[in-house]
Amino acid sequence: MARYEIFVTYKTGIFDPPGATAERALANLGHEGVESVRIGKYIQLAGDVSFEAVTEMCEKLLANPVIEDFRIETVEE
Amino acid sequence: MARYEIFVTYKTGIFDPPGATAERALANLGHEGVESVRIGKYIQLAGDVSFEAVTEMCEKLLANPVIEDFRIETVEE
Image (cartoon, rainbow over all chains, first blue to last red; front, top):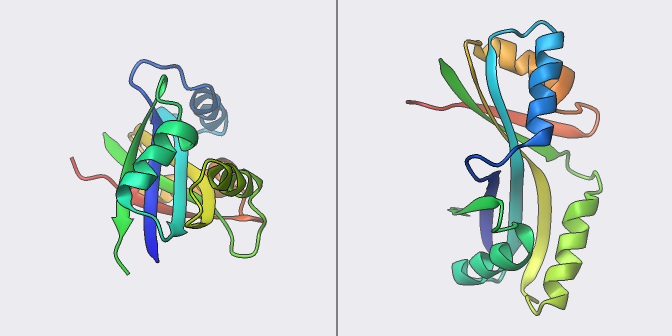
């Protein structure tokens, strides 16, 4: 069985509402040194599937290619 | 300025609704080899903040310690 880690992030220039909210909330909590927070998805996928199949899953379902980039890493057992 | 990557995942045994939905949707799309999908958060944080401060941010705001684990990595420039 293969294991993959997928990192989905907003493309540069796309507004990230959860990240912006976290920035404000952290400032309110007193963490004034924080300059930027971007919140994406961290997906752990396991199964009898190839890297190419996982790429297709990202393009079709797990990420939104219009506004998001994704990166896939194979996890060594 | 320091850069950190934070990985927030559901604790083992905690039900992951987005992950379960993705599993079903991928099966419906014909990806029948997929055994499990877990969807967490991938947070990129930058600023003049220490590792200890980022740990506190995770405990207080970025993760929910009741149901989630988090891992912080320092990004080398």
